[in-house]
Image 1 (cartoon, rainbow, N blue to C red):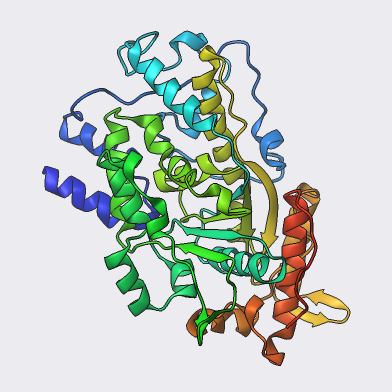
Image 2 (spheres, one colour; image 1 turned 120 degrees about the vertical axis):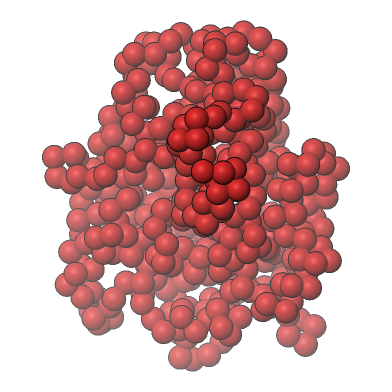
Length: 435
């Protein structure tokens, strides 16, 4: 297998691939190793207890069985490794290693923790929230756009929507293709931001230049003047591959995770909420969003496949946060990680609204998830309404529509947004009357 074959296979995986895992597997097959340092691996320190998977997720292993997830993080530690090493691990000072034990107390370890601490030590006033599900097609982008628009329009919140998904669904929900094409050619996109940091120009990069304001304007007036967008790019998958390649060779591991957090620090005071629409994977772009986030939500359709991975997401995020905490522990640093603020059901099939009844399949699944996660399931939801399917084509979120036929769907978003604000600990006062 040639080097060209390697790159083609990794790029061909698309957003759903796990580039780091495949790079390592293919290097083993070819019989070569990446140039430079070997991957950094992190393991828990002795004496620290770690909660069981059922405690992390709320699901009992006796009632449900989930496939083992073997994808690796930038730390080189898979979920399976994480579990097996919980009670058999080196002391904190030996935690970070490049495969030959040379990170133990040297300048590289100090640089790594210094990068983390300087980034995490910056004061923030905005709330940063990731919307994430490893399964696509669950209404994640619809939920992110509609809540962002509703916060801006009806609750007078200053909102930045960051589209981290190379599918660009959230972007094209709010911009048509010609406007997006013109914008990214003149101002750039999230891809431009990543490329600047990867090229070493992050300190001088002005993130404001890629943020699109005055969205949804008609006759010079914006329907949601407090809503801004950092648009995505169809070629963002190439950035994920670049990040994976640098991480696989041990280069700038933590600085690669901190790109989004560092960049948005420039503008965070301008917003009350920053919402990340994450891609349906746990690659490094997604991890950038989580590293920048205070909280995350899991959108899910109430069916078997969409809810199957809820515990997997929780476990992966907890493991991700745990490894960063371990990296910081020897120098006294802390990292709480993003907190799961809820599971939001989307595309729910409603049989009747008065009284509210769901189709049997969705009713059973909602009740089952609620039994295992009673504090996490949102009381409000998004139904499977044609209004939400029409909204992206019209470039007009349902939450901003004044059409009488959109009333029921619009009210769903309003109630959901109120609950969203309450769960995030904000003041919930509707500033505008129902359109």
